[in-house]
Length: 243
Length: 389
Image (tube, rainbow over all chains, first blue to last red; front, side, top):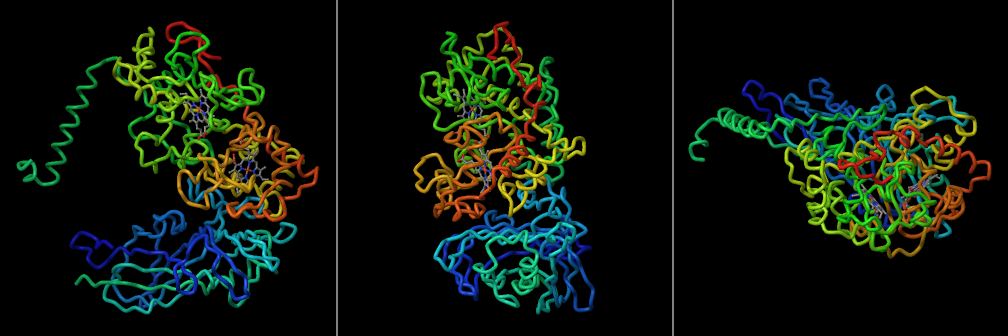
């Protein structure tokens, strides 16, 4: 967290966002088959890659400040430590903030093929014939079937499509959470934590044995995942008031 | 230093600028050393970020020199015809810079060095290497993450090729001295690097510059993406299979509409075996157990010319490769989860679907690349000798 320099501008600060991933409170251990979801599926997560965008902070006086750097989109990849913290160039006025919201994925107006030509973001591309743009998320792992077979799942979210490819669905969704912090300065770090297990709980209990491991071409499943997705995040804030 | 420290930052900055100007004016004394910067034209949809080391900017003169060296058998340090070898001995333009399965010397595409020692793996093509940021060779060991400073980029692969027992089996001092003695080369080194003295570093830099110019962006599929040419019905069916999760689902690893390189350049275990003991797989680089049996996913550009397939050349034809993805997948704890048919033996394509998929993959052949005169052997070397074809 860097105080903006220049005496004339001490009213604003640069926020840092940190992204953490856990399963019901304990930090995610990749590649270890030791989690059981509500449906009773034993599973492991091997890779997790996703976008969040349009982070907006709402101040106590109702003012909304949107983070605009990097097209307002940030990519997170468990295998790339540098993506787990984001310090956008935006400066935020000091003050009391009561809530934070963001889009999980990329909203329709920006989610077009060609937005990213460089890796790693590029490798999130979603096939043009299926609506184009980018995967909102790729979570790859395995679960143990009722027949005890370790079977891959690809929990991929993006633009959905009906069976004959004539209707497309924007499955991205907005997460809004109370910041619950009243401070004179929005100082240090906003931590955004994903509880992986919540993708599989409510309102839709996720049973891979029923749904199957792959959902890119299964709009009803992606819709259920998106409904669960509004419950997977928590935010916390550590601020130190420099004054 | 004490005096310098008393100056404000700005003054100090100005002083160092003056010093830089003084330094650079020294090197520019030499009228012959005035290299022309070479700018890669980034094709439509291609990455804008390129893997060009800061200490080896591309120049027209560097590339010209690199092309000669790439095709000069004396890079091996030898002048006897049967002991000469260059990069171009194995890396043939007409085969997308592999040797091909029908090579007269490397039977079945199995390459070996001057002394007959086999290369540990089958070949990799040289296409669009400037856009690989994740590591060269099948294991990706040559990358910015390598703690060994001399194993980080294509420059370093050149030095390795000269001394590796399975390639030139040579001695860099011998190579350096021989190149130095060949009329024409000292002038080319001076034009490219400002010194007539041949060094391994400058040899490596020149060849690396040349390899970074090898760009494929003009296949039938590229033309389709640019709206210049239509694909046939069969090719389009294959494209849909390639790009869909319920189809053949190749795109997650091999790229496609959003990634024209046709590779992510990342590493996966694609389910060929159940036991893994190759000491040069991805695991050998990362030590991460999930990387057992993982290799760099190869670009599918020009793939019809680069058999045999996989790092160990186990498949002779594209048909065999597609049969493998369709019915021959083997589950192991290390198989990548994107191989989601791991428990069904594969994607189970019908014969018609297999034909469609192959028809699509063949639209990735780029004849402009395969015949581009700028990539070909220069024919005659600086001293008038014949270059490797």
